[in-house]
Length: 320
Image 1 (cartoon, rainbow, N blue to C red):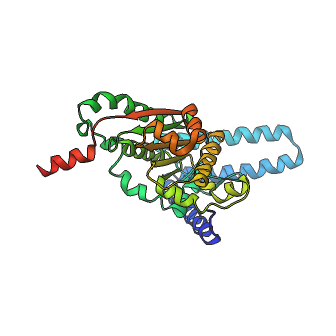
Image 2: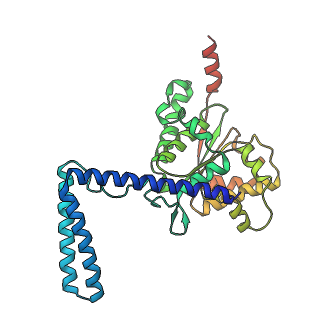
Image 3: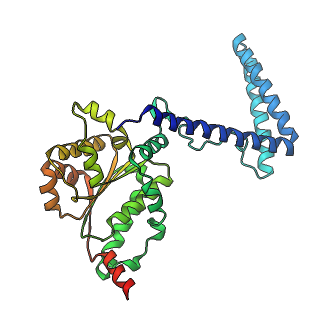
């Protein structure tokens, strides 16, 4: 599902606004410094003049003069930084401060879409804004062991540590995980915890329930893998894909083959995926085929969730 021209223009207008706001803030910071420290204005003007002379000497091929100008620029820059440091300002206070340093608020790194562009694309195409409200309540800071039963208080700590380390080292390993086990044991909650950490770090995250995913795939276009990749680029390119509640959808041979294509292409590209299911491993294999099952079990970290249903226990406790 590619962006329409209108959707693309909407995203790019957002970058234009971001660039303008950041430029306006930079001008305000510069004016503040010039008012407080007139010497810095003189230094900036001297540095500009020096740069112009440097360009002229470069054109005239005067290497000795170039070295003298470089030393002059370095001296002026050091004086400016010393004034700022002494006054308690960061040395880059007058520089442009980008919302996304990776793409410098252009949306692109070279010819490739930046991760921040991909997240905007995801939000437009797949309504992943659902995550924004949920993640305010479901994240590592709101995690409490009080919700677990006696069995879970033994089994959950290592699972939680694995999830925390996964989020912490995400850029370094790019691994995938399968959460499986009993209904209502916290699989979705921990997926959301990881999503919150990664979104806060600027990674792109896309979330699907199995029903949403298979509904999308049921309308998948025919043709080669390149056509499929073009149509579903955000789904394939997001830093993390979360597939929640697998096994509750109506699947068929066609959609299962598309699922394999997604998982396989993401794995080959070094992209991470988290799948959660209430199915046993045997049932998961029976529904999604040996090929899908083999791909997951050979390359994913498998985490088994056990114990009683947290949601039911909360309802019972609330009715007392």
